[in-house]
Picture 1 (cartoon, each protein chain N blue to C red):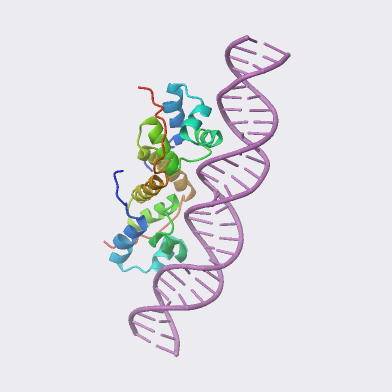
Picture 2 (cartoon, helix red, strand yellow; picture 1 turned 180 degrees about the vertical axis):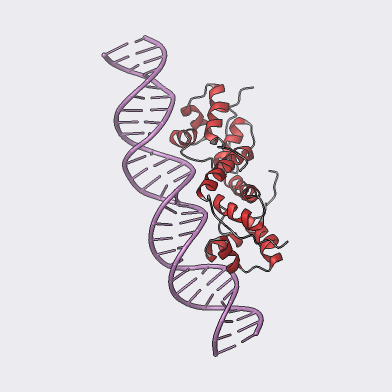
Length: 95
Length: 95
DNA sequence: GTAACCTGTAACGGATCAGGTTACAACTAA
DNA sequence: TTAGTTGTAACCTGATCCGTTACAGGTTAC
């Protein structure tokens, strides 16, 4: 409800990390210790940021792994909410 | 680094949601719209809380889906950090 | 033009995971 | 004994992460 179309973490990664440093996908992937395809897939929004990838990003860019996973979470949640649109679930918590 | 052994969300779910309401696994699973096995698997720490499950939990127990996913994230991150123990990644952020 | 990169991506395969159904053994309570 | 609850094994489907290899298209330098 809160977030309208949260950005895919890959966009943020590209705009805030790779582009400012003029890093090529190839070089960044090598530095992160993953294949070029894996990083490219994230940058183009075809894969999510896994916990392990979040740790790699945190170490490489001196950020917190949590911040990357939080972005991924917001994105996944937004997708899931669209998928479960109209789902009715009875309230279980007693007053 | 911060969290020592964060609890699996299933533990929290059992202790804070099911037990206080005397809810059986069978009844809760039915109310959530998932199979008994799926819920049991989460409660016993054999499955994680997916984004869709987080939404179901949020609706059923009047909590935020984010809170469930955050717990799952902390747990996943803790596991991933153990798996990547000793991983060295060169710092890429220019000063 | 040619060579050297960088890039996205298709096409494999492997591993893991969420989720379902069915079925069974164990336990508890009426 | 009978009924309800529970964990879980077995099996299936679909999705996702990651890897390698290979290709086509782009850019840049010579």
